[in-house]
Amino acid sequence: LFPQLLSGRYRDTQTSITDSSAVYRVSRDKSTNVTLIDLPGHESLRLQFLERFKAAARAIVFVVDSVAFQREVKDVAEFLYQVLVDSTVLRNAPALLIACNKQDVTMAKSAKLIQQQLEKELNTLRVTRSAAPTSLDGSATGGPAQLGKKGKDFDFSQLPMKVEFVECSARGSKGEEGEADLEGLEKWLVKVA
Image 1 (cartoon, rainbow, N blue to C red):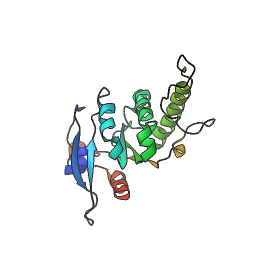
Image 2: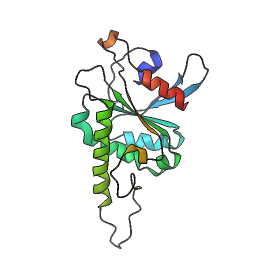
Image 3: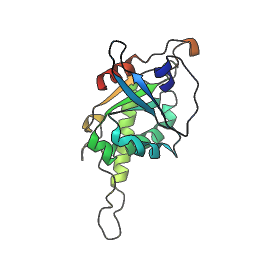
Image 4: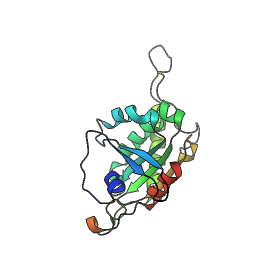
């Protein structure tokens, strides 16, 4: 999505080990620009890069692979949980977009299904994390904040930030020559700029 937004062309990418940043013109008729920062997707690095940029983030785009989602739902939810209970993220409450990418592929899961599955998985994580033992002296460990409202199943409306879902495709329906579908993402960027 990052190179497609910036250049308008599809490019195969690999999981990176460093961040990339670029200025993005939000709208053709406005002179509004935002700095986009693409964090590495490798699981051993993504949290350390998030740590570096989270305080300045006005918005977060959390990209989900809609094709691999079913088999990766636990990993996706685990990372999203860590983002959502982070004290800086909770305090700043940046707008959050869950971008359900690869919608050009037949087996892609819909944004609605992804939202439902994430809420269910985040609720499970919340329950298991809140049941974690306290420290030896009986005090709480000062761990991450509680996700959502106590006593209710988790849903995204319980968060202090506005969370939206959008279906998109960086590749487009005809592979590299196809027209990418980033309209929902681009409209969201205009809104949060």
